[in-house]
Length: 203
Image (cartoon, rainbow, N blue to C red):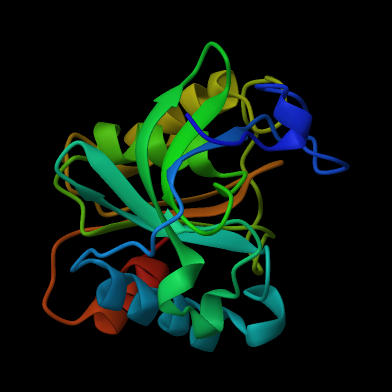
């Protein structure tokens, strides 16, 4: 099926990050999705709003659902300057073996389990984004689970559903301990304005 990250040991902890995800490449072709320009704009908007130093390489990931797949920025990508080969298309995620099956040149980001789940919890959303850090907000407690695991993703899903109400498209925003800023952006024509509206909503 291709190579797997972390020495070919599915689900092993990723170095010092404590994240549970391994990558298996279905293909290393560049992702050819019409969502890529939208996601690049989202990364730029987040970097402009939060600060380049808070949205630099490896600081988080932006994602959007495309049919049964999820297109997202890959591991180590700089959110403020995303290029075509910075993206991966998550074809499937195995929560038992902690393996992300992807198309693309990068590894899956550590946030892949979370983005995979949230794009299903909010199937009508325009974007789902995760950026590490508190960004001037008080972090909310999160149910205990292994850092970066699928169990943690389920806990985040519950917290976001509570923050965003019953809508399957968002908006929803939360700053969660151990995870950081998580936002669900509803459909809109202007990506930057939509992100700003979620960030500026009354707390």
